[in-house]
Amino acid sequence: MYCPVCFNDTLGLSRSGVVHLIINGKQMDAGRFLFNLDDSRREDIYKDFTKKIEDFFKWYGGFGNKEPITNVFICSSDFRCDHSCKIPLSNKFSIVGNLLERRDVMKTLGEMAEKYDLKIELQDGVS
Image (cartoon, rainbow, N blue to C red; front, side):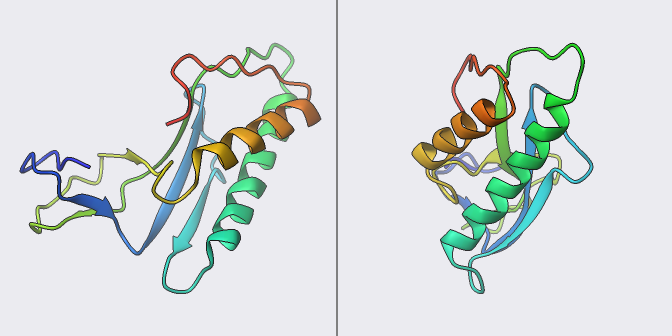
């Protein structure tokens, strides 16, 4: 990925950090989970993701006037540049394709939408 500071293709996911789930611009206080690539298997990270998605869909499914899910942003500010650039903490980048596989994310979204009777009409896919 390209570093927003030096503009080189040197940006990569850190070995550990926090993943944020932002769906339709909404984020639960508990809508984040930790990852550590040194201590956790990818399956464990996927389980954490699935639990947080289910928590969110359960919460969102309880709304009286819910809109279809059009935007899913699964992101982290825990990225590092190979050139040691100082990346502002306000910058968040998608972890889909880095930490979670797109097909697994789409499968989980579909299963949870069906379980909690929600419609998914993604505008730009998952990022």
